[in-house]
Structure formats: C-alpha cells, structure tokens
Image 1 (cartoon, each protein chain N blue to C red):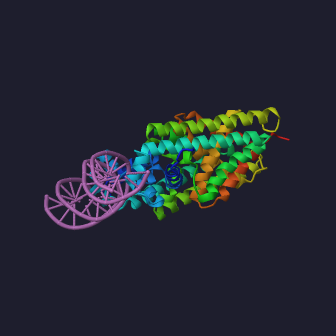
Image 2: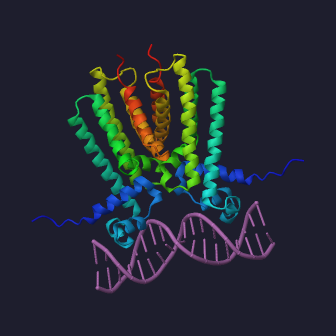
Image 3: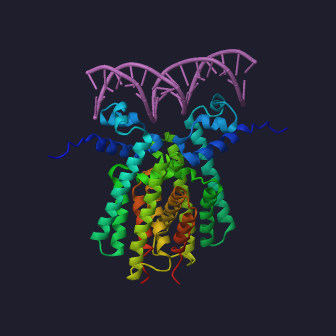
Length: 194
Length: 194
DNA sequence: GTCTATAAGATGATAGAC
DNA sequence: GTCTATCATCTTATAGAC
C-alpha cells in the first residue's frame, strides 16, 4: 500500500514561494503564509522549524525544478537559438503568471541578509544556469549559428544577468513588454553574422 | 552670514543608503541606522518622520545624483562606446566600493512592498536611465559605431537590465569579475560589424 | 535636535493540550 | 499535525522633558 502523503508541506511551499517571489525573503512572515494557507503559525513551525529551514527548502526545490526544466529544453529543442528562446520563456512565464520574480533573483538581491545554507543554494542556482547556458552556447558556436567573437561563458553570464535584470525592471515599471525587449535584443545580438 | 547647516540629515542618508544597498528596504531598521550613526531612533524620526519619508528621500537623492553623473558623462566623453563604458563604470564602482547593489535595482526587486512614492522614484530612475541610454545609442548608430539592426531603445533596455542583473549575480556569487564579464560582453556585442 | 520613556503591533519561535 | 497560549525581541512611531 502507498504511503500516506500529507499534502500540507507542498502547499506551504507553494504559498511561501509565491510570497517570496513577490515580496522577498524579508518581506513576508510566517503569519502571511498561515493566513493564506488557513493554518496557524505554530503549525508551520512543525513543518519548517525555522524560517531558515523554509528558505532552504524553497531555494533547493526551485533549483531542482529549474534544472529539470533545463534538461527538458536540452532534450526537446535541437538548435541553440530555440533552446535559448525556451530558456527565456522560463523567466517570462514566471513574470507573466503572477508578476513574480525569479526566486533566486530575488534572493540574490537580498543575499546579505540570508542564512548561509540559503545563500549556498542561490549561489548554486546561478552556477547551474551559467554552466547550462555555456554548454548550449558552445554548441551554437560550433555549428555556426551563434557568434564566436565573445567567449561562450561570457555570453552565458550576459544572458543570465540580462534576464534577471529584465524581470526586475519590467515588474518595477509595470511593463512586461520591457522583458520581451531585453530577451529579444540579447538573443538577437548573439546570432552569427550573416 | 551663511546658514547653519546641520550635517546630520546627510549623514543619516549616507548610512541608510549603505544599509539599503546592502540589505534592502525590508532588511534594515531605524535601529540599525541609529546604532551606526550614534543617535537614538527617536531622533531619526525627527528628521524622517516615517520610513516611507526616508525611503523617498533616499531614492530621490540617488536618482538626482545619478542623473548628474549621466550629464557629466554626456559632457565629457565624446563617442558612444566610451560613454557606455563610463556608464557601466558607475555600476561597477558601486559594486566594488562596498559590495553594494544599485539602490534602485534593490528597490526594484522589493517593489511590491514599497510605499507608493518610493515606487514612483524607482520607476522614474529606470525611465531616466533608459532615456539617456537610448539617446547615447542613437548617436552611436548615427555615426556608425554601434550596430543598427536592433532598435536603440531595446539596446538601452538590454544594457540597463544586464548591468542591474550582473550586480546581483556578481554579489551573490562573490565574484565581481562576473560583472565585468557581463559589461564587456554587452558593450562588445553592440559594436557595429566591421 | 536629541534624549528617555513608552506604546501597539509584528515576528520568529516554543510548550503543551488535543 | 494542529491547536491555544505565551515568549522575547524587534519595529515603527509618538509624547514630552531637556
């Protein structure tokens, strides 16, 4: 027989993730989660004893899921340009769904206030993204679809930084079109010269 | 005779700005400022009655000073490439001085939690920067030093987003070199094809 | 202008009953 | 697992003396 799976921890994480991506780590409290979930703060502490525990769970889950999405893109799309477009879509969907920021972009801004294990996850998220992007870009350079006069790793860092920054500016100005402009420009300028 | 100028308000703003750029709007308190300045929180409230007042003063001052720096760049540098390099240096110096983020990049991430007048300043900061960058880039396209196959305004948005994002990623990974890589790549890829 | 004193509410967290 | 009750501390903010 299957194990009895409490749905609560996942629901808590889902709600907390929304708050985190919208308000930041220092911008929401256990009370906010409790009110949204319909539970008491004491019950939250049963599942996640400290806010640091919650933060780690949130960042780690996000990182794992993001890496899974990256694997899917690698498997499904065949050329670099299409893979990069799908990559940008990952961020675009987050912004469009509920005006959320990338969870690690938000935590990255707040890095100086985070518990060490949360910091480590954020750091890892950025490294994972850079590594994946670099691989994709190297492939695109090798097959001649992407420009080769800029190092792949630097282009990877540019793509990551541009998309993270674009989410912040787009949301702060209330214009999601700004994200699209940045995504379009950064990918367009990476194309090989004809 | 000259007016007696209390140095305190400026000192408060200087200290608060450092805290804001490091920890975020929701990551510091009047107490933090008070301890650093050597004054009581009640005295802070004399100068800035509410945290919203302090936030507006901070964002407005930052925006004004930044616009002055932009005017200096326009006046002193003569070609687009050099102006854009100086522009990137503005962000780079902030990061290098004390591992601070752009004040409005930080506030942009926290936008959902900010008092309305602070939001408005942040929004204005981004619009100011985009407008200035667009003008610079248009000039560079006209004199043939910058590529013209991407709209100037979109390139402007890319530059702004890339630098804001690069500051966050660089600081979160503890590697300022990542900022340089992004700045170098984004400016390099804007150059006209030879 | 700065201080002491104080307030009301929020916050992260624990003890112990059910 | 969830609850009530309780906590120490922090946070923004005000009143009034100096």
